[in-house]
Length: 118
Length: 118
Image (cartoon, rainbow over all chains, first blue to last red; front, side, top):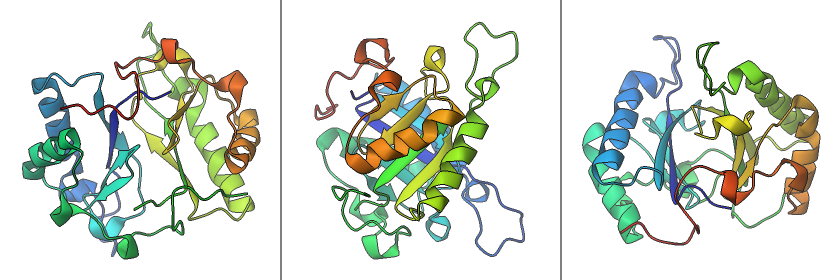
């Protein structure tokens, strides 16, 4: 029950230009997703790694926001130029630390991924 | 590095009405997502569980498609009526088997989630 090895979600939320929170789309997220798709294809990873658009990931201050599952790696301020390095790191089981959003800056209440919600 | 406990992605891809593959949106995925959001709010799970729209999850034949991370649970043919049961199961660490898309029907090449792509 996996599919895919790595599933990359790129926030492509759009907010009005005058929104104080800003939005990932205005910061170039569609281009980031396109670059992921291009690089995945080039590396022969189609079907193994998938880049998807996502609605608001609720980390607006850190946009362009990308989350990689099942690893639960959150990346912020991602640019087109960062894409190859992110894929290199995934292949090597590493994290690109300079792009990682620290836990304390992530919105959401979860402290650990293994806790239940019951 | 978690956020959220459970991150639910609902495919909201739109294809032309005459597309042979069909699409999740035409099958009611925006309503499914709305129902998730409503139920998450009602259960006091906001910030712990998040429902997001997603672009095409590439499981069109199984739409409405939903994937839950980090658990990597793929659900197909999800309706608005199924939402409470899916959240109940997540809270209990269970899977709603009747909705689960069997591995052999999932597109994508990955056989196990722990394999690297290097």
